Image 1 (cartoon, helix red, strand yellow):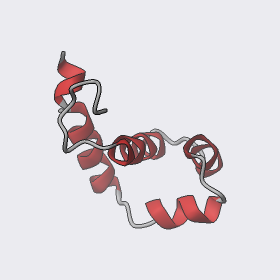
Image 2: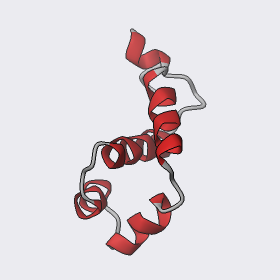
Image 3: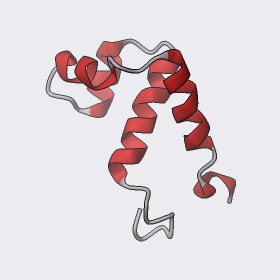
Image 4: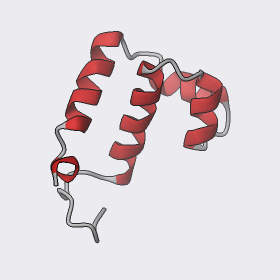
Length: 72
């Protein structure tokens, strides 16, 4: 992120979390999301994303889509 010139407020974990939210919103199984994100167990993935509602997911994807790096 640092070397790409992307907004310095965007960190790897921000992008990783947005990716997880995007997958969850698009009905990717929690097992596959857990593997893709490299979590130690499905329980870790569930704990991280359990509080998300559909509204939160749409907000997260909306914010992800508005990143300047995507509009270059």
